[in-house]
Length: 117
Length: 115
Image 1: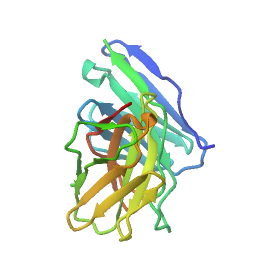
Image 2: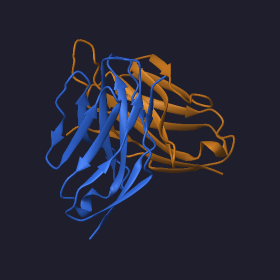
Image 3: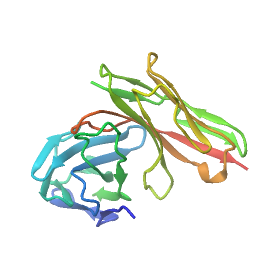
């Protein structure tokens, strides 16, 4: 059974703290993503990684960074948390599209609720 | 830039009846994929149905089907014989083909199913 695991479901952090959100997938997927979900805005892409050590900015990268040192792990880092980063964060992964026509299924984790106070 | 728009923040349907959720998108690409995801209160995103843009035939998965109008850039989801378990938030999503294609989501539609 495919699995994307976000290690922390609920976090409460103080303004200015450094926050790490970890995501691990066990499907040997090349591509991994971080989204945040806010009411009325849907899911917005923060960063994605199409291979180890490769990353690209999404639509809202400001205030975030990422790390992909190993294929199975994609970390989202909030260098200095702020209250406007209170949100639900979703990690996702999929296989590479290279050489395939089929739009591969994207698998999501269960989400991490972050509250910054 | 590609965008996805869901203009119905909330919808409701009577159990056993049919409901259609709307989605429009904007892109200049010719090769892409469209998806409908369901997000129940547990927050896990569940793939409901997928459509490849190069296929003219509308995708179907049991009680779920789509009406894909490529020229109009419209991708609606029809749920037949609605069940209480269908109550959730539904997201329409777009992704262009290629390894670095980002999955872009609409704002979501909350579906209520009335017994």
